[in-house]
Length: 156
Image (cartoon, rainbow, N blue to C red):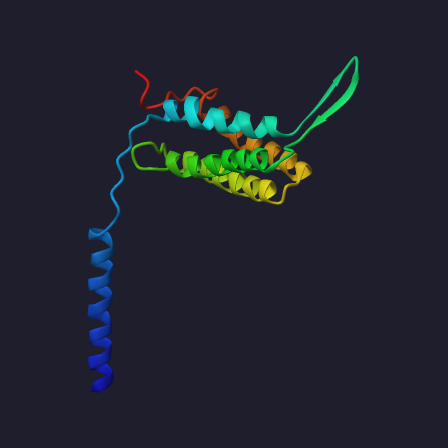
């Protein structure tokens, strides 16, 4: 009998907690459209990250560029973490466009997270490699949702 009472109490507690989680969920209020996110923070962060490491070949030779101080590495990290969290913003209920969309957004989260770790490691080579992964995630999504003819919900 005590085991049955314990099982009943445990079940009641579990039901009560699951209800509390749903009722106590953090509310979200989106203020930017998908296009605004793409043209604003996502475009800015991607350009910042991709421009952090470069090789330019011109008539004067080969010129390598990489972050050279704490501020530049922090800027590179900030751009990467912005991209990672932007993937989460794209999956919010007001912005998501289904399972394929969410899969692409998760690729951006993962690529951005790896990119942030590359910046934390202060590795120009890793930043370059992760920049390619961010590009691949963005391009795959754009091929389906921009080039593939699907019109964003928030565009008339």
